Length: 137
Image 1: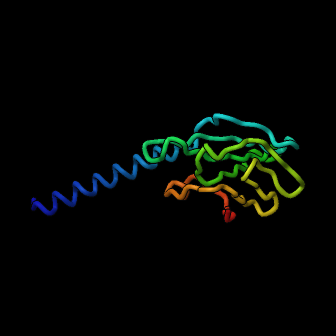
Image 2 (image 1 turned 60 degrees about the vertical axis):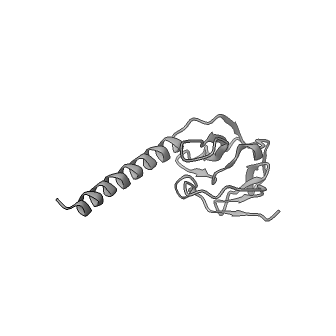
C-alpha cells in the first residue's frame, strides 16, 4: 500500500469521526431539558430556555424553544445567543409572543431578535429551525 493511500484513508476516518461526533452533539443539544420554562400569557405557547453549551460551543450559549401547546408537534427554535442577554419576562398579543428582545410572529412563524450581539455559529444551521431577522441596535 502506498503512503499516500494510507494518509487518504486516515484522513477519511478522521473526517467521518468528526462528523459523527458533531452529529451526536447536535442531537444531544436538541434533546436537552430546558433550564427554565414558562407558559405565554395566553397559555398557548410553552417558552423554554435550553442550554446549548458543549465541546463545540461557549459555555453561555442557549436557545429558546417555543412549543405551540394547541399543536405540540409545532416547535420553533431560535438561533444560539448568550444567556447573559436572556430575560424571560413573557409578553403576548394577537400577532406575537415572546420574551424581552425576542419575538415570535404567530402568522409568519418567524423570530425577530433585538439582541445586542446574537451569536453566529455553524450549529445554528441545525439548532434554529425557524426564520429570523436581527434588529439593528
